[in-house]
Length: 76
Image (cartoon, rainbow, N blue to C red; front, side, top):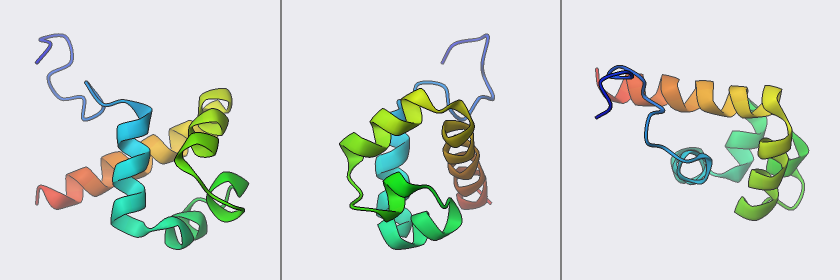
């Protein structure tokens, strides 16, 4: 692990890994209810979600924050 980011839960995780984890954990329908963006609610796919999230910083931040929250809860 990089000594500069020892406590960063996103270190080494790609956006694709994060989205796949959340879809596996919640499913598209529930994920779309938690983070109401069209790429999760209207004909969702990993490819379209990644395209949108890479272009939209506020949405990516919501996805990353949800991932961090889930990872933190699973460690308790």
